[in-house]
Image 1 (cartoon, rainbow, N blue to C red):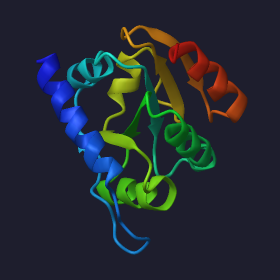
Image 2 (spheres, helix red, strand yellow):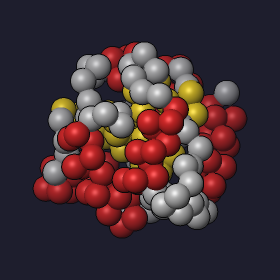
Image 3 (spheres, rainbow, N blue to C red):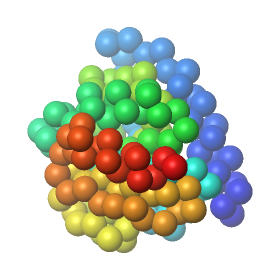
Image 4 (cartoon, rainbow, N blue to C red):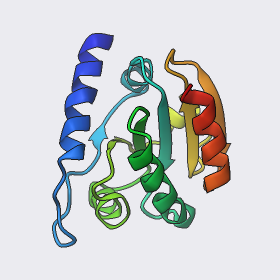
Length: 158
């Protein structure tokens, strides 16, 4: 199961890196997922940053450029977006406007249950940081800033 999930994640990652959407067309909305599947993705043998966001969340918009820069400068870290309590069109528009071209895979959780299962809350934004062994290194509640993100990345990218 984990190997299959890792393969799906790898293919999605490659496709995300090949994104050439322009400002006019919407990218595909995030892939719906469950807590069990999502937890298997986290345990895929590489450090991971899981950012929980929503298109209607203003702080999510403010942290997007910081996450975009970090994802581009840390290719050895998996950046995973988890869109919660949103519509497919709202999520796709947010990706196009704020995260287009970022090497980041996005999943959807319409109920917002996955962040709670991971030890967080239903509030957004929230960012989880995982070491390569799948253990949680830290959780950041609210919009992440550059100094905090740098500290967390240092912790997981050793």
